Amino acid sequence: MVQRCLQELGYKILNIITWQKTDPPPNLSCRYFNFSTELIIWARKSEKVPHKFNYEIMKHLNGDKQMTDVWRLPAVGKWEKSCGKHPTQKPLRLLYRIILASTDEGGTILDPFAGSSTTGIAANLLGRNYIGIEKEKDFYDLSVARRNELQDSEKRQKLLDNIRKTENCATVLVNHARKELRELMIEKGICYLRAGDSKGSLQVTPGFERMKYVLLHTNGENCQMFQLKKEGTFQIWTKENLEKYGFSPEHSPYYIVLHFDNKPMEFLQTPSDLKQRMNTYKARLYPINDFV
Ligand SMILES: C[S@@+](CC[C@H](N)C(=O)[O-])C[C@H]1O[C@@H](n2cnc3c(N)ncnc32)[C@H](O)[C@@H]1O
Image (cartoon, rainbow, N blue to C red; front, side):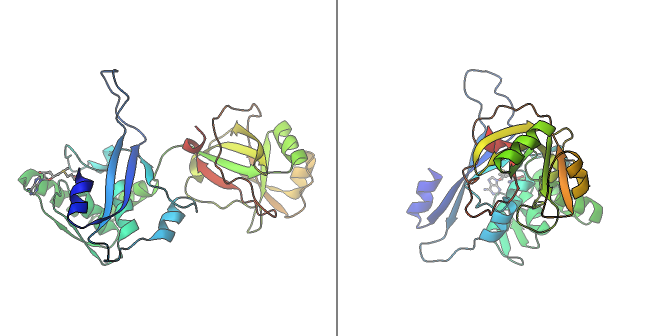
């Protein structure tokens, strides 16, 4: 309906983004599927007016994969309600991503239905200007209190840290190894990667601290997933130490070592991009949601 109105007014619809709540409140009646999504219409004023899209930033946020129009983010957290709450308050993470994706630093953002001004808080944190319109005095006061909170540099930093944690789901380290090495890794419950900047080394991206599983494969085949002995934890070993466990590492003096329980776990699917050409494998972190 809103989409149709916008089109009738000459707007060009760019995307309909689905916000999938990773922690929806339960449906108490148990007579329907649980409601867990909301839609975001991204549109520009006319066919001809260009729009801003910070494609590379979004890709980077998504672990160097093109970001899709399904955003898995949790609902508003307690940490966002320190000044009181609005009945339909939106999560800061959501507005932060919307503003980051589609505006430049120094730009001005208008929210004609400001509520508690989540849009304004996200705009401020990202160095954008904000104009909010709100008819209820209580919500205006709440907005002002939230704005004042940003003057406290510790609180401001805490908000930024929380926002940047993005999804709080566990992550899976996906690592290629040739057949014999993969089998030995599984036998010993040890996965290793070269430390340092080389082919096959791990790119540490946000989510490393939530790494809970390791998936081993050989060029996209024989995928098996295992649980790490200790979440988000790794060791740095020397080549000699690995040799004591029967491995023959060749490419680096130091390795990142992860210990896992070698009982395979069930999962439903794997990301489609595990197969690589010409040994360009990069160990990568994926959200566990990509496997279930
Ligand atoms: C869905 S809420 C916005 C929530 C907001 N995004 C937040 O995170 O807090 C919509 C707000 O618009 C306000 N509102 C509704 N009609 C309005 C109007 N005609 N002029 C100004 N504000 C209005 C309501 O009071 C309500 O607080």
